[in-house]
Each structure stands twice: as structure tokens, then as C-alpha cells.
Length: 503
Ligand SMILES: [Zn+2]
Image (cartoon, rainbow, N blue to C red; front, side):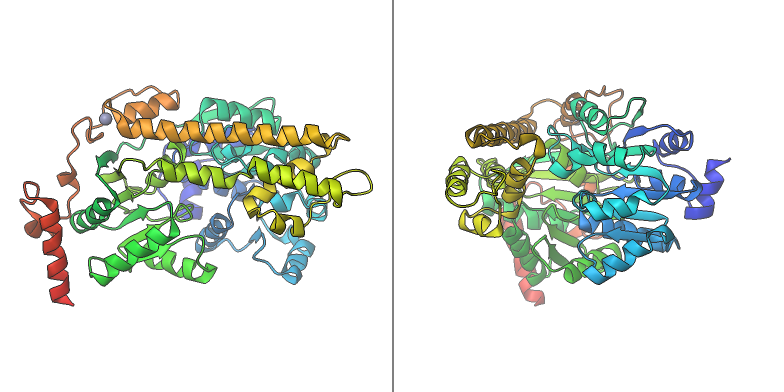
């Protein structure tokens, strides 16, 4: 079978991107496969094409609802209608209907949480699953930056589904994480396909600024000068909204904010407008980007420092999918690491909260078998967020940990919290080290992923002499020419005056 002609037939592409063909060949040969392909190189094709060629059904475990929806849309664009996402977007009635007709679907997307629901698993057991796909497989590992407790059950679920052929996909996983994925899925013979994590057409640029106000000015200046479209990432929803309003109000560009706090319809609308070129800039939190299929994103600016190198690479990987030069700029001002540290702490329950919970449970919230009765009332009273509560449930509800000794369980939870926080802080400080690096930024990343840098990239990073002027838009060059020598605040004032004149 000529894979290229199948690719052309189903998707209209002439050739495969790096790594795709190796992964597809391995799957079609019936081998379990762990593939690490960089963001922006078309990971989904690695199960889409074999899925169409294999006889049975394809089950894809995906961590994010928005990502699942995007994938479903992508399929429909290629004319494949036998695709469904089993997630909380479906009403109870819709879900029932889908479950009764599961065998009609070729591609079934499901969240790991839903896969843990007994009657859903029973329904899936009736099917002939020819490929079990674990997307974003780094979520399996405790050493992955995005560990999801439900992902760690996938090995057991795979067994209950009759050990189907398995494909684990990730864009960014260190060697330790990759070993963990294989162990957790309990796959004895597995083909490992590691494509380079490098995207040579994306240049790295870090700029240090004295404070956040200067950062705001700098963002406006950059947006004016750089070739568009682009994405500006923020760690806070409020900052993303403020910047989008500023860019719009001053008529600097067509910008909108995008974050997890917005309703689903607005999010889809903004995403579509950006994809179709009706918006120039998206001011987003990390909620934006997974599954975004836009080829010509020219810049990614980070207004805040990401929590780890892995998510930084995922986010900048959305630039330059057309292979043309693109730039990733990170703006840093002293103390910027405090925000990710706060975020890391807020994702975990505090020791005081756990202590309170166990005392409370001792008094009144115990089940007849001695287990703690976790209910929403306790969650609210203890001030737990959803994420924090999920961690508590994971431990208290774990059959392996049901113990007659609550003190021991409390100790186990507290140890986990401490270890997790230490892990997250180590990641944040590694990111900061990257920002402060005086050696090549690309080499630093290669080193972290145990990869060897074989050749020098022409537009590598600021340390290697990359010039931002090379990424300047040609249409505005006349207006921004010779500004390098000027004080950029004066330059900014000029832009703002011009904008006001236009208003
Ligand atoms: Zn470099």
C-alpha cells in the first residue's frame, strides 16, 4: 500500500510531515507505538489515517474538551462524519443516544474521567477497538507537568478493553516521562519514535524590562512592528482582557481576549475569526491554542513567564506551521516568577485544608466502612477549588489507600502535596534559568530533552545574535524605520497620538 496516495485520497496532502510516516507505518504493522512529535507537526494525522485504513473503531483519549471539539471539527472538514466526542457537552439524553449507537462511529473521542465511568466502559467493551490512542500522553506521568490522576488509570482500562493496539502521542516529554508512559500503559513491546523537539524556523528572543508598565508599552510597540498575526500569552485572564481592549481601543490591531472563563460560544467564535484572518492578535491564557490549525502565525509573545519549559514549547509551537520565519518573544521583569509560584500553590490543597478535612471527617462524615464521606458540602466549607478537590478525591477514593488509619492517609496526602509543589517550583526555576541564560537558548532546551543539537540554526536566539528587525512587517517599515536608536517610550507616545488622531 502506497501511504502517500492514501494521504492524498483522504486528506489532499502531497507529503507527510517529519515523523508522521514512521508512526503510521509502525501502527499499521500492528506495533504499540510511543511517538514524540513537536507541536505543530500534525500529531493527529498519526491516528486519523491509520484509523481510516484499519477495520475496527478508534478510541482517542483526550485531556481537554476544547481539544476534542477541535478534532471533531477537523474530521468533519475532511468529510468524515462517523466521529463523536463523549464528554460533558452532551446532555444526558444525547449521551444515552450516543451510547446506544456507539458502533456506528468510527472515531470516538473521550475524556479519561468519562472513561472511568463503569457503564460507559461496559458499552465500549462491546466494540471492536482496533486502535487505542492516548493523546497528550505526558499527562500519565507524575513527572509530567500536566499530571492528570485519571490518566494513570489508562493502563488498567486498556486491559479491560482487551489490550488493543496502542498509540501514545506527546509533543513534549523528557526521557523520564516517556519511560513513565510506557510503564503506566503496561506495554511490553513498544516502538519509540522521537522526532526532534526543535522547530528551526522559530527564533527565541528574551527581553528584560524594569516593570509591568514597561512591558505593556513594549507589547504595543512589538505588535505595531512585528508581522501579524500573532498570539500574546498571559497567565491572568484580567491582563489578557485589558491588553486586548487597549489594542482595540487604540486601533493598533484587531484583537480579542480568549480564556477559560469565557463561555463556549464566544470562544469558538473568536477562534474561528482568528483562523479566518478577521483578527490579527489574540490575547490569551494557556486555554487557547490546543488543536488550533492556523499555518501563518508569525509571533508568540509571552507577557508572563510560563510555569515550565514544556508548556512554553507547546505555546510557541503554534507559530510558523507554514515553515516560514517566526518569532517567540518572552518579556521578563524582576519577580515575574512569583505569579507562577502562586499559581502552583493554588492548584494544590494546603496542609491546613487537609487537616481541617480530616478533623471534620472524624466528627461526622464517615461512611459505615470507615471511609471518609466526601461531599460537596465539605468541599465548599473547606474552600477547596475543583482542582484541589479532585486531588483529595483521588487519594480518599483510591481503593489501594483505604486504610483504617486516617493519620497515615493524611500523611500520604501531605507528602504528595509537598513533593508536587517542589516539582512545580523546580520547573519554574528551570524556566527562570532559561530566561537568564547567557548561552544559546536552543541548546539549553535540547539539553533538557536529552537531545543533541546537530547543526546551528540560522535565526537561533538573542544570545546567538538574532535581530528582531528581521521579523518586522514590511507594510509598516516606513513608519517604524530608525526607531531603534530612539527612546521607545517616545516612539510609543507617537503611536498613541497617531491612534488618537485617527479616532
Ligand atoms: Zn541560540
